[in-house]
Length: 337
Image (cartoon, rainbow, N blue to C red; front, side, top):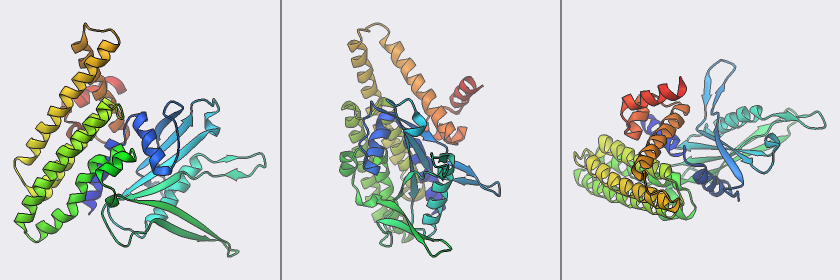
């Protein structure tokens, strides 16, 4: 299961390096907020905390939302924390408290009464694989020496209860490609039983689902719900999830190539069409091809630097983005040295 956790973390961190436009929609839905895209700014914040033992405590994703209209950002910001889990874990609530406390320490301040205040982020845990023992929230009772009790509670999202249409309706776009991960449990069971027929059937399901998710991503792009960089990330996530399922369970020599060809056939024409439409709107008819080339290169730079900032190494970045490893190194050297 550790292998699944690592793979899922890599893909989710890649997907959550989305445009500000997409992140605002996602956080609104996750935490029942009502932020307006043009009124706030979202940044991904530090997720690593040094413990007293000098060991590193790593959370998954932390976000900070600023109110653009208020110049005093430090007093008008909100912090959010999402943690991703593949299986039930009775220590999760302790870890969530640790993450919240560490992030709260970064934002601690004193009020007019000279009392220190520590602000926990709004938190949620996303569980991906179905388990009847997972509750709607995680609870921890903290007991003080005077027997005074404090209930600490974190809401849970049960990902398996959402299909692709519901995720789109709720504007949780970065989570859309993870519908493919829902097949892992059935594939694992079939492989354990050496049930070749079921594996073949699930291979067809995976191929069809990948195409459906890719086309839904394309529609979101056409509707201006997501940007080109988001569309690209979602297609790459679909490719990587198919690769993961195929290598570990399906072992179909044609599946990965078929999905890669399919996603490329969607991305290239759609991005080109959008680029031309935008060029015409701006009255730029000359140099469209050059502009598109520059746009693609800039998109690559942003993706590589964002993933590097999330702690992913050059080889992993190259694997996920399909950008040549030498190009990845060139981008890092040019922009960070």
